[in-house]
Amino acid sequence: MVRIMKTTKEIELSIIKKFKKKIWRPFTKAINEYELIEDGDKIAICISGGKDSMLMAKLFQELERHGKKNFDVVFLSMNPGYNEKNKQRIIDNAKHLNIPLTMFESDIFDAVSTVDDSPCYLCARMRRGHLYNKAKELGCNKIALGHHFDDVIETILMGMLYSGQFQTMMPKLHSTNFEGMELIRPLYLIRENDIIHWASYNELEFLRCACRFTEQIEEEKRQKAIKESGNVDDMSNIESSSKRKEIKDLIASLHEVNPFVEKNIFRSVENVNLKTIIAYKDDGVTHHFLDTYHDGDSLFYGSGISQKFDGQDIIDKVQTDLKELADEKYKDFHANLIPEVDKDRIIGVRTPELRKYATQFAKHEKDALTFKKHLPHDYYDEMNLHGFLIEKNKDFDTCINELDDFLEYVDNWATCDCTNPKVLGKCKDKLVPHIDRWIDSNKTYYVRYAMKLLMTHYLDEDYSIDYMYKVAGVESDEYYVNMMQAWYFATALAKQYDDAVTFLTEKRLSKWVHNKTIQKAVESNRIDKDTKDYLRTLRIK
Picture 1 (tube, rainbow, N blue to C red):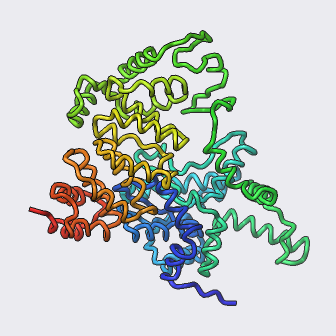
Picture 2 (tube, rainbow, N blue to C red):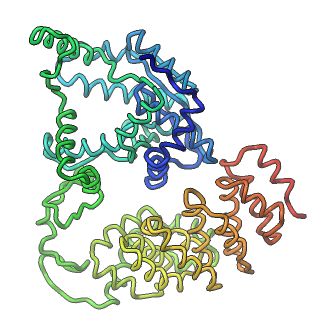
Picture 3 (cartoon, one colour):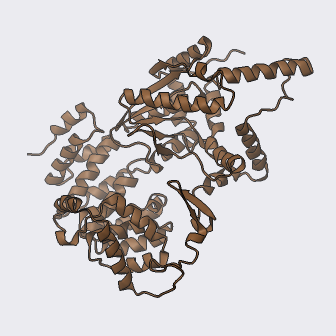
């Protein structure tokens, strides 16, 4: 039976129609949840010719069509020494899928063909290095690889069973050899069976592993099958030597007993409790449970000596620690950004350092809770630390209660904007009533924070024009409320243009917010030149 590939348009429609739930949504969820794309990125979409990387290329094209054009891409393919038939298949598939390939040559297959020890590992490392080099040469700051959900969970089990370590593929990571480059894995949450289904549904045939080493093994298996059974098609008695294949089979057998086993393996690396781990490594340093076994729960306990301290001692300890982290130049610089805060109340701790401190502080739960109860804090840096501690909440209701207490004392835009608890984004339906409550409060930073949440969480998959009306309905004389209102609509113009632009054409915003929205939109890299030119004509004089 002759397979007839579907048209490019049909293939593209299948992604957002038939496979919306299984492929498109997990793709966009990974992009958002792991913050894989940032404004101004130039990403090399690395295409090997297999089903995973070809699908990834189409997903990025679809992302561009859905108003997410705040980044650039290059569809990068390397020929490590494929035979002409395999190379041509990649070119033909890319042409049919309307993927503009940038292909370059290398001699990796020749280099590893004589290696007996771990040729696949060496090949993978060399391919990665060549891709980084070429991507950097093309001005990219990220490379995207097509590893999927099943690759992730297989890696977890392979590490445990064959290497004696607990780790996984990360959704993104910084390159250690190529400064300024990152690797991202946008298919992180997509199941392999769904990718196979997509390819089969669209009558697409992609390369599997096309290296000479694999071809040699397959030929040896074929010859063995002929020798043992006399039938070239009978290879049922030939077992794969691949460790990953063994893990695939193991997971499949476990799935028959427990259909949730794959998700549970994945969740195991999200729900690690360091208090129940004998030892772990951080930046090459091993931390053993006995290191802190006698330290108690307090910041002040050490060497097994138990003491009790009141709330003021906790505050004094935190202030002392923060002053040791102070950077005077940063203090002077930052004071100019938040003129509403007295400079004497700014210690000058850089945000990355403050976040690291918050992560360590949060491990001392009782002390952190005591600190959060002592509001308002004396210093701006302490308020930001408080916000970062709130971010550590895994429970939605606890997070909301702490935000209610915290926002009452927030007195500047920076502290308001830097507090971003992830649990809120995971409970969007439950969050809406609290957003309504904060907007209706008429308190400056409650209102600003509520609009920021609408901008962060409700302009993409959970978008509704009702939220846009909610923000437009805010009337205030407060500068920082109006600035957030303009920021919201400038972002909305990049994400939900057709609805957002009507608020300008119909002049539903105050004159100041209206013009500030246009100014911020024109400054954005996510809006094209023609649109910017049109927006300029909408300014109110």
